[in-house]
Image (cartoon, rainbow, N blue to C red; front, side, top):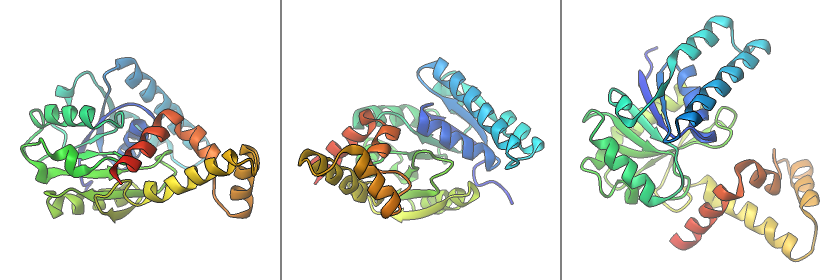
Length: 253
């Protein structure tokens, strides 16, 4: 089966970016990973190599597949190195101005028919695309942390997104071993809209002195069946990521 996008660019080498790069390489795409901090790209490539080695040790990948994945992953020294990518996924800080500036620059670099996608968790896809010359090739592509293990990805059409773009992203999500879901361009989409209640209600329980952090985590994990309690989840995600998402969704509503 032919890979949906043979060359994929990922802008942002943090936890989300490196996770997207990992599953894209595993799906058979050549991946170019870019970050404004070159050392972050080198760390990400080293970490992904170590991750594939662990999968080999556990018998989840064979030596040939690991070698192929490592060969397909490359550092991009600048955005210009993403010029031949058929898809570029952005995974940078959750700020509208930063994302709009990035895509405005990318639009002048990639081919006219290349797909641009944002991994935003809460911002309006339509708003990010508003300044683009070709908003029809732009969509939301929201993965969850840790990307290789969290199998859902939200595919979000903006106001002017071409339906074929979402169809392509949906097919590619399946090639990466994920389950795509179509989400409307509303604050928080599906998962983060629901997830804000998970976190904010847990914070309210602590604030009212009903129980402490560890107890709430233990009850929701052991008795309700969540993989992580709300405070464990906030620790994993980082408050510097969770808090702006809460603020963004609150303000948009």
